Image (tube, rainbow, N blue to C red; front, side, top):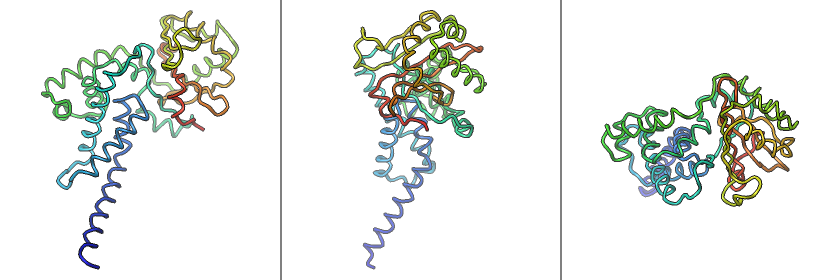
Length: 302
């Protein structure tokens, strides 16, 4: 074997070990990207871009590869958020981020306990890109403000200010209660009442000031039935819920971002995902994704 072959073997082995080390960090990188972007496909794109940058970089001097990769993925997400802000036209009050769906399985639930709710992601969508990054990286992943400052190209005090502004906005977000069994009972009761067209039953489950946000995507005209809408107040929400009664037989409980919600599946096609937020035993927020173009990319949990 001549020395060219040896050199090839060494670089080949190096690339393999780099790939292994990247895979060890993939779950964490995907979690960061998903919280930054609220989109499953865009999060995967950002992680893929981080891999391409890693494969083109000399990281022999990098002591903490996980930290290096988190920085790269965060910068990629920041660029994506900034370009999205300039092109997004849909009103944010009816935008629902991509949900993460998993089976109703006690072990899965344990894995999902640190997941981020859709209600939280809806609020994160309203933040400026740098605020969102500062909040996600510092408050959710524990990065220092020195590290955050380097990524957003600001001073540490300015990074602290960004996270603080974001935190004030996020504090208003509905937070789920901690009891998943009670949450599941409420989700099941809501589906059953919708199926039966039970007006009083639905009303009893809702907080008087409940908010329902339904995102049907840009392809459905605003005047059409099932168009995107934001409605407030228990009576209005019940009337809205009863318009979906015909789909109720196809609706079942599933874990939506780690908490019990509902999915509607017709002929093996995902037609809708509903996340509910429960506070003090009542539903305070309902977020529905009914955008068929985006639902098409989501796996249906078994």
